[in-house]
Length: 124
Image 1 (spheres, one colour):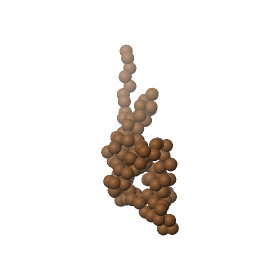
Image 2 (cartoon, one colour):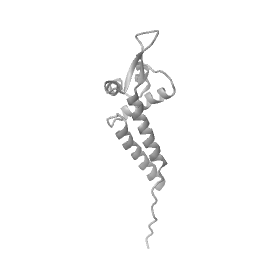
Image 3 (tube, one colour):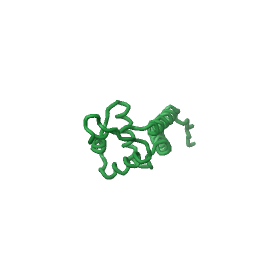
Image 4 (cartoon, helix red, strand yellow):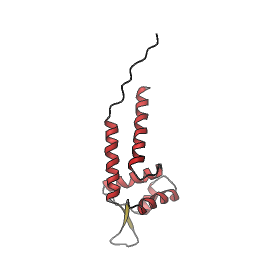
């Protein structure tokens, strides 16, 4: 049971770290959006706005709300396709990358921290 408690503590610590490091406004939808953009960027897979909205298991309206916030706050920009000006690709900005690197470094520190040692209590 103690191992499960340690895993739950780590999950809570990671969630708190995400809330302070990422522009997610305490929303798991925004968290999913940020992670998806980060993964596709790291894999060098260009994604369009349409692909992004259909890739996530959330309503179009919810994804659009959080995506527009990322766009308006300067975390992502649009890049037009060279062959078809109607197609817009999503690109993370340095601001996005910096916040993600900060989160990744803090998350690594959390995961690398050994679990607290608890002394056993025995009843006489």
